[in-house]
Image (tube, rainbow, N blue to C red; front, side, top):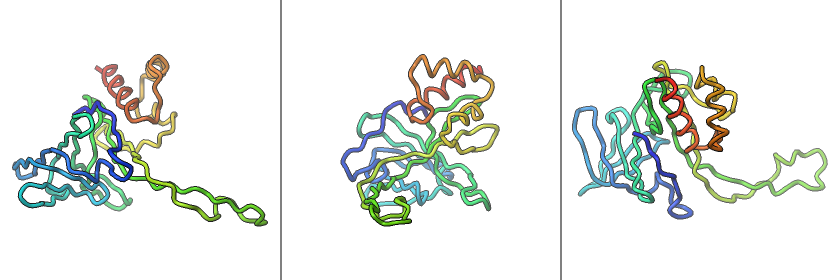
Length: 202
């Protein structure tokens, strides 16, 4: 379940969720479906292309796997209960980045839209942040979560919160991050930090 490769855009407007990958879908009914797979985390559905296209939701899939076309790395997504709206838990897809006996690092990717402020020079009393903006492009972004004590907890990317999520080994983690030049908010670095923490727990 550990995805070790780096994600890259195949083209300016082609993100991983917008293309078909070789993959496998595992249904909650015990059936396995192999073919070309495309996922949509915003709507929590995954599609399978064989002779026809079949659509599955997070409620009838236990997990699915894809092989990343850019580096042949395997990525695994699991259907897990989570409260997104503060009302009740529903099943949604999370990618499992690193897991151990104590803690797992999860993520959900999304496409971030970038705008550039055009500025409001000469307009008295207007906040530049509220001025006109122009579209500049898209970027792949991630929200991160830690699965611990049977619960999924969102990670704010605040460096202080990293030690709250991974308690009990603050000095060891700080030393490990300094030694290896790791950051608290980068995908591959978080994977290494989480794996190291789980080693310390053993």
